[in-house]
Image: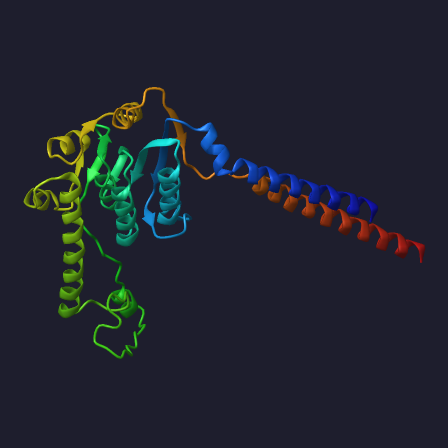
Length: 303
């Protein structure tokens, strides 16, 4: 018990140190004193979703909440003079993409979108809201359009003699159910919704890029463009890499000696100590269990 008490004391002390240190390191006032002429790099990698940033089928997802939080931090930070959105995303859900794009458009500080490999669909929607778009000449951009396709396996159910019992209170209540094929009315209804979303998408791109609506409508056939093609079509401003984006950020923010900082989620000291503590308690439990087992064996032998 004496060993356990000692370990618990050490763990408590480590927690206190970690808590105080994390508070100091995360102090906005301290960060402001350290950072000046900052260029904040915010990464958007993977499909864009509304909240969590977990993964599906091995592909990481980026939550709009995390992106919005980083954008707010960069916007409020006095030391940050420009923001670079480093994009490598095929797109995402409509609302998540739209709310990030609207936030980017509202920021008064210079914003530059950097499309490294992929900045398509919803990710391009976000990029279009920036003040300037830089993309690699062989990157994938555009793909302006909306998709709502899904797998429908009613035929598979029929092959295995499985019946879908339909009980609804409205004609369209189970619209899009994978257990039955779409009716013509359902298909028309879904298509109308997609057309409304696409119209908003196209309208925003035209406004953000200061392009004629008719020109964007012609480009909005869902196809993607390489960076060099996107430049010809007015979907980006210039081809280049991260250095190009940083150079343009300096020009737009009118700064010379820049400090580039990446807004990424790093484990704090508290997170690290939590992990260590979990491992410690596992070891403690294992040790106690072993001790109990030995004592039981000794008692048994003593009998």
